[in-house]
Length: 243
View 1 (tube, helix red, strand yellow):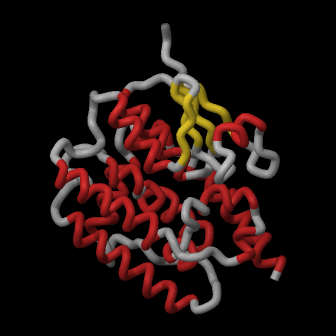
View 2 (cartoon, rainbow, N blue to C red; view 1 turned 90 degrees about the vertical axis):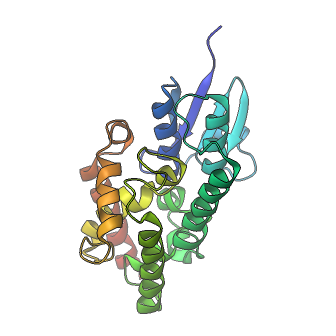
View 3 (cartoon, rainbow, N blue to C red; view 1 turned 60 degrees about the vertical axis):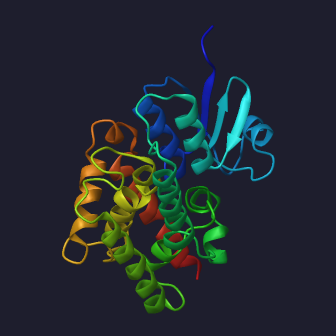
């Protein structure tokens, strides 16, 4: 009997894409359901009644929410091509840096103007999206926010050292969690003419992003860059005109 594997997501969400990347790396077939975040499906609300957001992962009728939790479940269920280290210390370190990315790099309180836009909320409100998101466009205390974002990027630059990926030579848990930094952030910079993650300031992190984005499996599960740039340009224009 074939396994039931379903993913409920939103095309532009880095959190949904985390789950799809992990499944692709494992070679797991799944059924994908695209959500309209302004009119969420009854199935999404059924499977994630607490947070009512994407991604939601369903395996043989059992639903799991929160992208990092889903990634760990996938790695424990399908043992091939592990994304987490085998030793307890390595796993603990990976969880630490994944938590740092979501809570520090991407986890400051969002401004109400962002939360009013349900489509963008679906992308960034996985603990909310902050230092890096807010640093990409004009906001209150913009210079302070940019300094905070730069500090977080520098911390990640130092952690990479001379490794190809955060976990070594292959894409792993931390790399997948950091997909926003590798792919979404550079495209947001193009949409807003912001300058945050540059090769000159963060050469190792910049190169890591290039390697991640162009990884044979990963790039199959990234949204089209032109569509994502247009999506963010439209959003920023609407925010600017609403002020």
